[in-house]
Length: 366
Ligand SMILES: NC(=O)c1ccc[n+]([C@@H]2O[C@H](COP(=O)([O-])OP(=O)(O)OC[C@H]3O[C@@H](n4cnc5c(N)ncnc54)[C@H](O)[C@@H]3O)[C@@H](O)[C@H]2O)c1
Ligand SMILES: [Zn+2]
Image 1: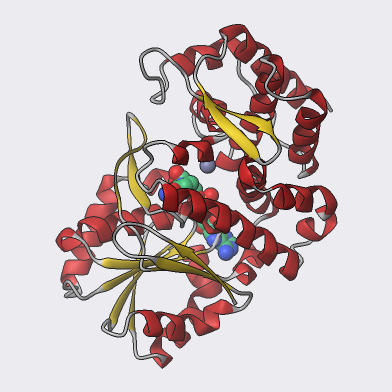
Image 2 (image 1 turned 90 degrees about the horizontal axis):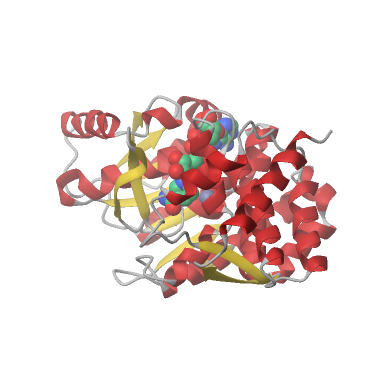
């Protein structure tokens, strides 16, 4: 079993990764949390149907009393009213300060479950058992929780670190091909940010990754988690370093917003954003063209990405009103080479415009 520590101020916790781990979840949590009995599992129906049984069997065997808090499926339910409903259910079920919240699902269940845990009775212990690639390599690590407002995504939330994160790559077998791939872009991102070996794994082991070969999948998840854990441990509250995790996200977020959050999965938007970031880095002379081409090729090799039905101008306009805009500056995370990125805030507008035009035409190529 791979075990990766996350060192945050409150308490260090471990991310454990192993194929088939779900069947051991009860024992692993019991070793960590001897005092808890009631476990409230925040989840969505598809995950509950496919993977609920091995989890609850294992929890019961270890003396936990599991209850389910189901939330409707979809990003649109990541909102305050859902948290209120779940909190009401917790109260009805008699949850007190010793209750444990277990977020079991993708990033939506993780963000809602984590936020619920951060506010119910001013804070309950919680653990994450993420079930999408995106949640396993990214969302479940680092303690950011929250919900969306009409005005924008993730505008209400809290830092609330889990007591443990348990990752079973086997649950990814039921994920749709598109969701699976979309999560992989965040893992590839981790490679570009700070792990050449991980990046090369994407270049050299394409077929095994696509086939979800367990050993390969476990390795790339572990490497991505290690990178994220390292960054979060150094900058828990996103004062500086943690921003590098936003590679591909400046343009990615603008693409998501400009297409009404309907056309692109988050990872797909980040994929286009990473291609744009590589090209911008090349335009401004920070990245050599062979390395830029390698990054673009690695992103594109993961499979087809949706077409971008946007105008380049609208993206640039949106970037200027982006929440990451501070003092009129847009921050970009730009690669200097594979495995190294930096925050840059003086990217000339024409370079951005050119890069967006490029990804747009790339997306329309057959
Ligand atoms: N907190 C953070 O640091 C952080 C970081 C990145 C993203 N996020 C958030 O994560 C969310 C996106 O997460 P996501 O991509 O996991 O989306 P998601 O939670 O909506 O899951 C995607 C889909 O996969 C289904 N699913 C989940 N596990 C499955 C499984 N094992 N088998 C079959 N189907 C399964 C879900 O029901 C859903 O339909 C966004 O809200 C984003 O803001 C948070
Ligand atoms: Zn992301």
